[in-house]
Length: 397
Image (cartoon, rainbow, N blue to C red; front, top):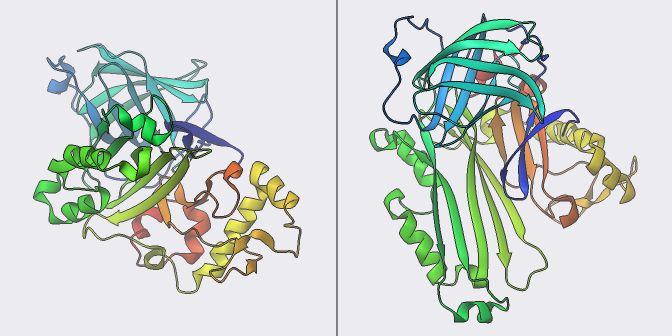
């Protein structure tokens, strides 16, 4: 992990860590090269300039330009709030966007922030819709740029977050579980691929992302709770899209599991990446040159040792130079000087490849899951020239 980063919390007890942009508050970073998709000029007399009669809701992906800089933006429009992020394809580091309360048919104002610091505002000149245009203004007011955005899925997929939940209503369950007033429950958040009905490749991806057929998800949740849901447990399962572009989709599945009588909940992250053209899952061996393992482990070890929290823990637990760290073990239980590759693979982000180790995998529970993001530029020497990432990394200079 790197010291300078933007932390966006989606999961209870877990934050999705994204690198902070290198852009300065009063001037977007200079960008060259192509965006995720070609941009088109938005006609000044477009009919989306007129207020719409119904709310514009859901997760939407836009491509376009801020001034002359190509950008990719994802926004989730809710009944009362709009949130999202954007990035410049050249360096990929996302910046958070927040909006105040949505007003039906009124122009949208987005705040570009890092933590609590305001970097800029995006004043949308028209009501929220498939096209957005307006003015980007730095926080100090010294710089303004026009922006024009168009909803775009030409190399991506439309999706929505959907939630299902159930809780046992039987009075005796709490006593059976040993905790008064708490019944077994399951909360399930899923990623629904909206065009999967008409595209066989997306159907294959959707099947891998859902624990049951789409139309039976609520029945699945209720059935899990009725059958005991893992011996009196409160379970939350959530999904987060981390990358959507260049015909690649990465989704991180997160589970928090709190069983009756346990000292603390357990957590698990399961990232996966798919080729939207074929519907097949993409593995590291598909992206990296043969023999990548030792080089990648060396890079990941160095980053972990440099991390402010994990590095101190590493030193305190006997991981001195030339000595193996007691938690880094191979499959036979032998100590290793290099961190093992994560059991649950990787996910893509706009800035690079993110590797995640679960609880107890390379440290005790108190350290928690560990994440290291390697930029596409750092990974370039190991990448296959004909891999699915070929068109992604070409933009990084």
